[in-house]
Length: 247
Length: 247
DNA sequence: CGCGAACTTGAGGCGTGTCAACCCCTGTGG
DNA sequence: CCACAGGGGTTGACACGCCTCAAGTTCGCG
Image (cartoon, rainbow over all chains, first blue to last red; front, side, top):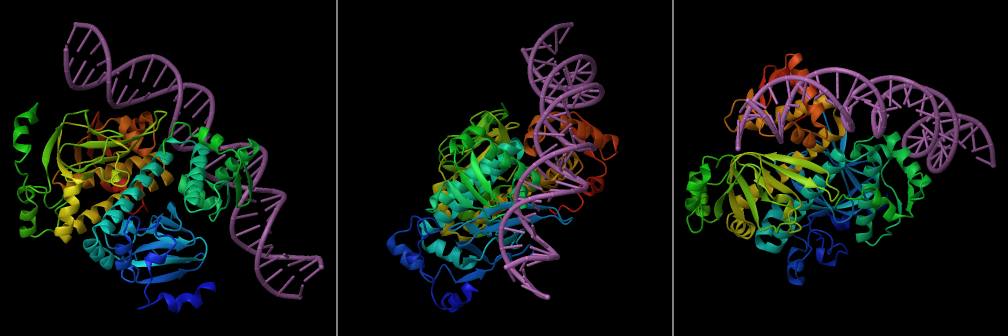
């Protein structure tokens, strides 16, 4: 277990310093001054927590008491109905927040599951709120991130409500590559962390349809796909598929 | 035009008092003390604004500078792609906020259109943020409402991604009646404010499918429908249709 | 009274789901 | 080092639910 040797460093009074984090320009502290960054060091993030591949950061029904920022690794959030149907509501990567939907009810309504070994920054919501009062630009950025999640969800609703299978998959790939690119990864080649079934759940499609669509994209010369490895050779071709669709 | 005679009262320095609003237990100020309520009087809501049936409160591309609370009337928000396809992302009624998705980018990404003559409370975001700093429970409630919108959107994604036409329409009706009931209206009878096409857009269905589904529900004895008037006679029957689905 | 918008209803087509068989890759144990 | 098992992925045939297209009805409004 890679993570366990680090655990002592990330627990208890040992402070996690946002000011030295390589994600500080992507994550919650965006826009804070040097001075403000140092004021939140050790006070915003109570601890780092390891979550192994396949394990849950939290589950539906768990009490909400902290917001999580992905530090390393990859997550999915899944909303499950009492008759067992599941909807993947999002995939989260480095610098993205998890748990925002639970602030209202104080109870988590989704499962957050690691799609690979991962580490998250634990931000107790009580502390986050207090720091937000002290540092207005932190509160502002937190509001912006909640707003961004709402806007992203509206985009997802558009995909689910208006698009055909090919358009959905193309939109998914472009969104994913765009976010990876913003984090310094290749914008053309990726090792997917999620299964066809998980992609399908997010997109409102069955796994066979996702698989068929990727095969068709390959046959059309838009990309190469082999299991979970995907190389996009014609991003403009993908964009053309969803033509008018903004964002 | 009913509203115009009130306009002078709602403009400029004339203060809008949340402490005397009949929505104060439903809207943003939920949970504020008497004292806190009086502190936001005339400072949170800069003005009330009338929006006539069919007109837009704001449109895609408009600069964001205020959050709106519905005071009277009924709205839809619509996300439109550049090729003209539209997705209704929500319907908003009294006490619900509009515009939260624009905080991040500072530009509105949806049209907010009144489905009947309406009045909204205009809350300049700058003032809202400042008051949030001054009154922590206001900031807390604002965060809760943003969180609630995220959770609602996830529910909508579940509906779009997992449900069949009948389930979608049933879920829509139950959600609508539940929200109306919370505002003191009948939970069984309603005059819909939106067209079949708008319902369909929200649910990812065509208007004919919505129409057929309502007719089928009537034939099954679940409700009476006549144009936009709907009376639900068997709410448990509707709930049974979406069985396991939580919320 | 007549027009247009919204709604209803029917017939037929199509895209995606369903079901099933097979393939690929990885890990495990003999 | 190979055999085997199992999960994930691919591909095909067929079914069916919703969309499309079209005609007719109802209602509100000038």
